[in-house]
Amino acid sequence: MKIAIFGGSFDPLHVGHVQIVNEAINSLHIDKLYIIPTYLNPFKKVFHAPSTLRLKWLQKVFTCKEKIEILDYEIKQERAVPTIETVKYLKQKEPNIKKIYLLIGADNLSSLHKWHNYKELSNLVEFVVASRDKIKIPENLIKLPIHAKISSSKLRSTMNKSFIPQIIEDEITKYYNKNNSC
Image (cartoon, rainbow, N blue to C red; front, side):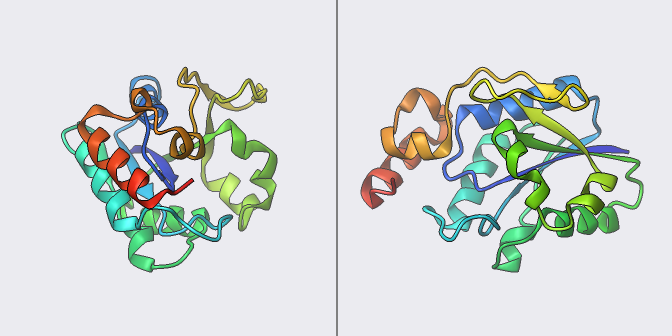
């Protein structure tokens, strides 16, 4: 069994995230893609939308998609969970896993060495990097070409509806406008 893991804050979920999921399913020949929202990103001190709401948005956008499972493992821990812990959890949950792709944004490349137990993690997964902001991706990594020029922080400040999946557009704009979460 080949799987991919796509974790993140998804605070908020945007079309760039959807492009990453679609491109991974179309190009990696995987059996399953796990989308795993964080309770709290290990490199951040706060979240803007509560984890349960971010989970609900992911479920609305991806529930009817074949090969995708939204996993609330990290949310249930109610703390920042290092990626290595989630990978080990999935290996235990799915003993038939032969290959794990870990989807990350190119903006994570510069700090990847700071991830908890990075060496062990890099032995368990193959990193797949979504292009972003013209960041150069090393040749030895798999590249996912993504064309949405957006980030969650930029979306929170602009609330440009063209970057929000239509099915959750009203909920996201209402939540972030009400809570002024820039």
